[in-house]
Length: 355
Image (cartoon, rainbow, N blue to C red; front, side):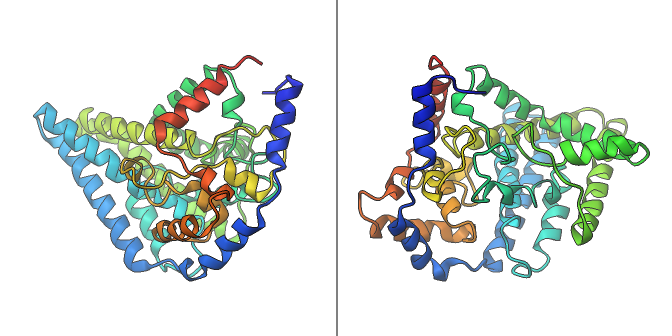
């Protein structure tokens, strides 16, 4: 989408070229040097407990006959599996060797059963953090949503609700077909192998060790997708439909979180680090609901763009240090918001503005 209003276009360029705030960037680096180590004693129990509660509650939603109890189990399953799935974001930032076995464990327990193996995000998300790519046409995770048409936001959410259907088709149908149809394989790798929101993004074929990791993860997701479809003949429709409803709800919540992770006001110009921060969103305490819809540190998304190497369990401490140290006029304070709905309203109003 192109903005034709010259005044609006000039304002966007001005936002993109906001000078970097040296004091903020220096403080972010110096105050958090002791917070960059991922702690296996936190990662493993958190991920395993979330997965255990999620899968157990999903089983309860399938097995119980009382509708209110089944719905309650479904909500618990959705929230717990959403938290477990959110660790895919941490996998893209964990230093090699920092958490031995965590990547494989997460994929086997969470990624493959949800048909979101980590290869879909690894090597993709880091491009979103690249200094010269953020907010441009080469950013796989950016669209100028605030500058698009009003119908774009409902469509953005609707697409997410269809995720489980799309994933079954992607892994259960297209993966095996692509093994015997080379042109389909090339298209599948380039266009349907990334958790991205930019429809123009194209992915390069994997190489070396990453290609081997991709292969076993894709094979596992394919087998699980086929098993899901086959489960109808063994157990009837209920288990599959409950699984898909919970998966769909989880993905919609994540899409809503994505909708408020940034202000989405850039239209392709390279941005300074400070401009990237101000286009991103923190939703810190005292609000408690963000812990549910933006788990595993995602409530500190703007701070994460300043400090992508800080693990999720240290972001709250990093935020407290910065909020108390930096001058009240620092741009850091302008990246903090109160909750989801005011941000959704802000983006919705922006899409309705005449252009």
